[in-house]
Amino acid sequence: FLKIKTFFNDPAVQDNYYLYKYKFTKNLKPEYSLDDDLLFQGNTFFSLVLEEDAKAGEQVEISHYGISKTYFNYMSKLLSVSGTSSGGPFQSPPANVKGNIKNQSNFDNYPLGYFRLSEVDVKNYTIQ
Image (cartoon, rainbow, N blue to C red; front, side, top):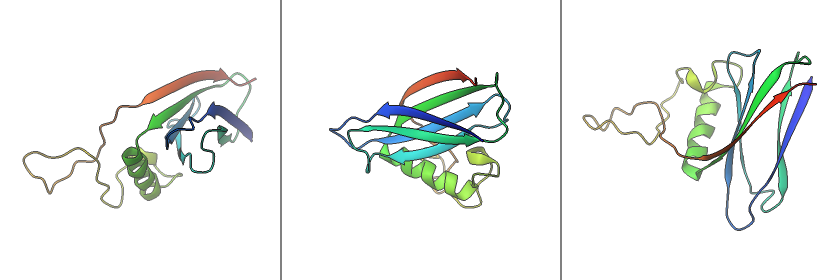
């Protein structure tokens, strides 16, 4: 296994929510995880991913998003119902997960999706 830790400084003056995305060139889909800063408010913290069968020379794109609490809740539900070993957040979920997009012609028919704006830091790393 390859273990990748990415460190960041959490601002102390507000509650923060984070989405991490790890995209390995050998994988078809990225890996996602979520965090809030409840346990590390105002300190240096890290995200962690374990990758099986990683080899020297392969690349990984690491994205660290600062997200809203409502998007954190939405992604928590979406990742929970989609499972981590199946199709990820882009498969059809077995339950109705409501986002913040509204169907203007039929308010009871929610489309799957969430419109968001967020800050992001992206780093590309080549495995040594």
